[in-house]
Length: 110
Image (cartoon, rainbow, N blue to C red; front, side, top):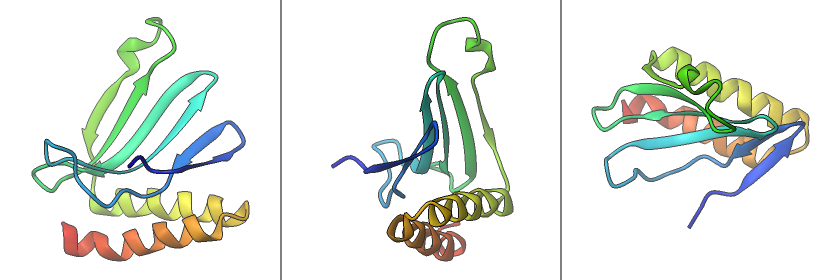
């Protein structure tokens, strides 16, 4: 079952994921935009390292901007807090609470 998404402005935020993919990678959440078509993802890789990934999807003009990098646990938590705050500000309290619960679990996952 796919995660649900909520829209705030031009960004669509996924509900936090609870399970890893077939490669052991857990994309905890993503934010995507249709115009321009781009996706940011944050999660934990198969080796239990937090990561950030960016993909430009609209055309090949900015394809070289795509990246995936390892980030610190603190950076991952900061992103979770920012997304939770944005969602709470726009009335998505239930999803915001899901992000808060994921934040609480991060240290036990890593």
